[in-house]
Picture 1 (cartoon, helix red, strand yellow):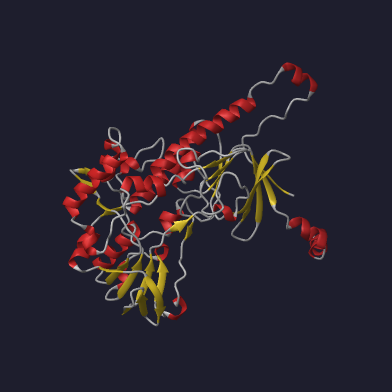
Picture 2 (tube, rainbow, N blue to C red):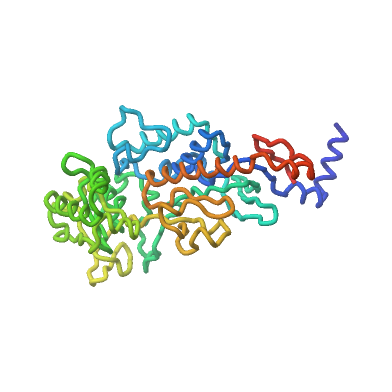
Length: 437
């Protein structure tokens, strides 16, 4: 016992020992490393598991689907019917409604991870990932909750951090002077805290529109800043989901004809949205989605509140003053709070050090869907299609098939003459080997 205390005392004052102990641990992963435990990362892990390929999932948060669990408002539902939001190999429970709630979708994801025995390493933020050309492996460095560092070494790297990794918070002149609450929708849960208050929502996408509706339901007084043109479509038309009807029509008709049909029916059902300050883009909703990724708004009741005057449309903000907003046309109005429904962005360029597959400008694969899922040297991307969970599922299946093919090719028997000249390789390991350097 005294010897152990003496040794401990020596180590406490030994700078070499301290340096060795503070070195990051290294983990050799025989299968792919997947960065991100959202729906996209879970889909790839499940598809790989179904093919007998083990993977390791790294997640910076403390749970799967952290965007859904931690950064979405309470009333959120899937905007598309559940059959278009299923992950590969497992459908939604039959008793779920057509548009599952946030909690139902999270239950589905938890069941999915449990079924395929996906156990991510939580609270590990990837700080750096780079391909080691000398050894032919990816080196993925992470920082844990207690600032401990780990390096994962793997043959394949799957980027599954997706399109919505970081909130986009615009710089508005005078934000520091406003004095009221200014928050991104990632921190908005319910309109209950804004009852009786005047709230300005910036951004007229699906989230901005639905937050305005939620504020109305909680007796707040919302206004909506519309800075650009926007397509508003009914969520359902002719007794079917607008998305499902569009997908069916695209089997037979070109995009422009389908767009024309959607706009005619929308005009009949919703009226002329331009009359209420919602100008439509020149391109049709599907053509615009294909070219820019901009999603049309599927109306769930917000437009009726705009028509009735419960939600006021405002132009772009010029600057902020003390509880006051000045708009670009010169008018000013007092508000108690501002909610930024300004979307999200990819964070890939901040940690992945490669310049070929991903654009440093927006963090998306340079090649658009359906060709952006595969890069060089065992690098893959999932969840960057701008086509939601359906697009991610398509890419997840492709990635799993490609990794299985690569693994089988690398494991194929070598030529006998080669085997005679070199010693046999060590047997493959099917579990991660971890040790301290």
